[in-house]
Image (tube, rainbow, N blue to C red):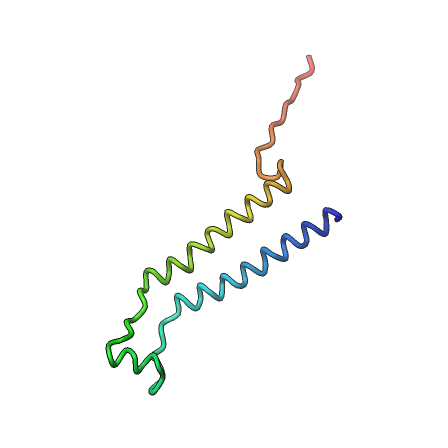
Length: 96
């Protein structure tokens, strides 16, 4: 497969994951709406059988996969383009 196609698929995957993670994080950090009256969640909480979700745990389960995806994409890019993220050394000779 041509390199341009592979790079295009890579960036399409990055874009799709960025959009998905944006909406996941937006949903996690949005204020929690109260459960509608008569819903199973409202009835369970009223009866004491359903505890509210742990906010820090919910944030961690949303943020940690996002961080993992960043490392995964950087690793994949380094495998595909070994010299892309490494410093370039330039040697110059001075004429006498």
